[in-house]
Length: 158
Image (cartoon, rainbow, N blue to C red; front, side):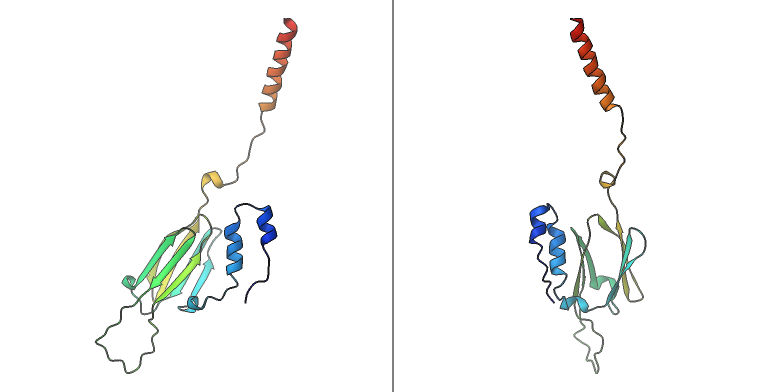
């Protein structure tokens, strides 16, 4: 299903939002490889998130997690045992790659494997300089007015 929304008017009146528009355009594209293994994304708190991926049969050495800029990549590759002869092979231990788009300032806090579930803890940490801050309205205007009135008095005295 492709989105029929035209974002070009927004490009003309905004600066720096290219990534958001690209995400919106790409969100409608089918992602066939991301269906297996199943996963959940949970909002745990105001700025905390958790990704839970069902990776039964995979060990810690078979999984890798990479945090790239604005992207979390989880890969699984189970090395098969060539010596075994399966009478029935029902476990889906095929390689997989999951890519999760991350917002700015989202960091990976922890990852652990528990009962066949890979749990990745995420937190959005906005730097102090990016947080809103209150600006005090002070005597800057009064200082300027005071200096200018002083200059006027000095010019009349001369």
